[in-house]
Length: 158
Length: 298
Image 1 (cartoon, each protein chain N blue to C red):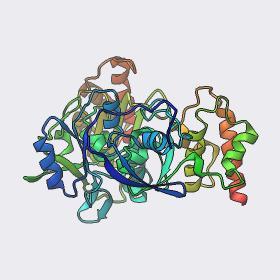
Image 2: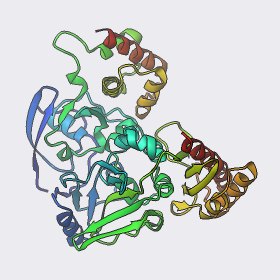
Image 3: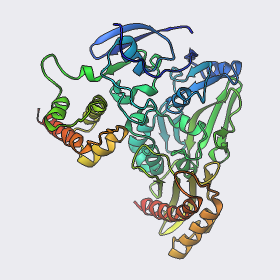
Image 4: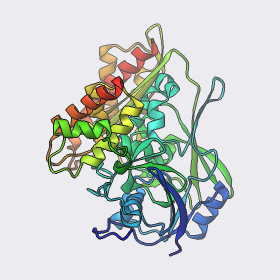
């Protein structure tokens, strides 16, 4: 099947790629570009492990074609930390123990980043609702929510 | 960079088109009749393609067609919502929240935030699911569905759009382009309630939306939309007739609830029994009618 040329800006890098249309954005990030921080859980949009930010909005990258992301700006978990400093959300997940096996963590962190950018003063209830598209099968939700709340405070004060 | 990890689940091969006009998209659909699928938000289609319940050889994206997304309102002509408008946009739009509240509530019930950033109202309706979260609100808000093809345009009331589970009036080559609702004033209110097992990321086992105009306690222009309780979303017209032109007394609300229940024809499935669904249609008809009337009074 004919490959299509696409240009993706992922974190700070621009990639000119020739990809099969059947590659999801998740497959493009992981298998073509080699950024494997974004995880595949359910592959049906239910678990949120594959969450990335496309043009400022969190989406499940398993539900989007790579060709549909042509020309768009994508942020993955790899793009959150600066050279020598973790993003406050990443730091808070470490400080609060907001992970157990860690598989859902990139999705939670990226979804939280997008949501806090949109609603920096989010309440706990709002955060819980906004993270409803992310599943932690270790069921460590309490610590995850604590981490996001604490990161939100750090981000508000900086 | 070579990757040594297991490759992610992917789709069968297909040819990808990004037409820039409805006419071109329609012509492609007709040319590849039965082998092509339209791609809007993708949150239904891509799941089907992964499950191999859909194996289109041609996928036609609507994304590059200008003017298909967006919300416009005019006090005379009313509301126009482009088919490619995302659920998240509808959920957050201040005009939709104020004047077409049930629709904001319905859109906000779809999937989770990430899904709502992708999913479109056109996809939600065209998919023909009896449980579609925007269907009952659009029924209650008197929506008209704009349909276009290479041969021209037509408009159908949403009541007549659905034919059965997964089946709609769309003919080969036809594409839903927009939804239009009459203008709404300060004295009109609406509400959608979705019954579900999980707080988010779940389908409705019953969905009810009501809309009403209220003047000094008398309701008029009442419309009630039901979802997930029949082969298609439908209007509870008998219940509407009972309350229209009256004030919402407890007795009348109960009569309306019974009428709405009687007009539903639910099935039992893993989510819920038919009996419970029928009962909840009545309960939610009462609640949404009352809320619509209350909201209509500001």
